[in-house]
Length: 142
Image 1 (cartoon, rainbow, N blue to C red):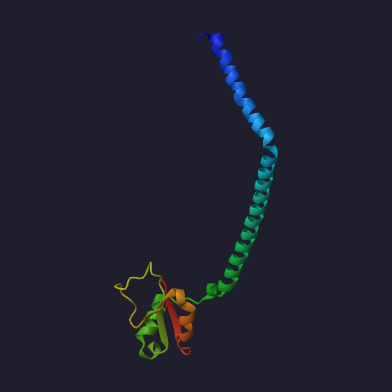
Image 2 (image 1 turned 120 degrees about the horizontal axis):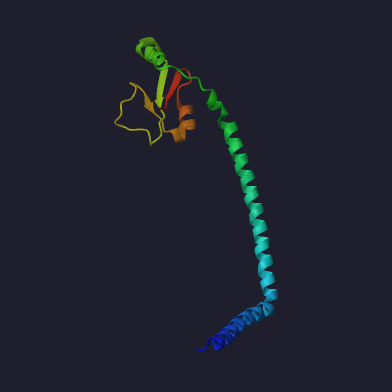
C-alpha cells in the first residue's frame, strides 16, 4: 500500500469516526443535556447534604464536650495518699476503689488493688449510681 493511499484511507476513517460522534451528539443532545443537568443537580444536593452533615457532626462534638466537661475537673489523688488511706483500718471502711480500665487495657490475671471492684467503663454512669454515696470513690483507669 502506498503512503498516499494509506493517508487517504486513514483520513476517511478518522472523518467517519468523528462524524459518527458528532451525529450521535447532535441526535442525542437533549438527552445528554438532561443527564448533565441531573448530575449537576445531584452534585449540588450532595454538597448541601455533606455541608449539613458537617454542621451536625460539629454540633454533636460540641454537645459531647459540654456533656463531658464535668469529667475534666475530677479530683485526683496521689498513689501514696491512697495507699496511706487504705493502710488505715478506719479509713479503708470509707473508701471504694474501682477498676474502670477498658477491655484493651484490662487483664483479669493482672494484679489489682486489694479490695477494688471491677466496673465496665461503658456502663460507668449506671454503675456509679449503684455505689454507696457515703463513701469516697476512687476510679483506677491506668
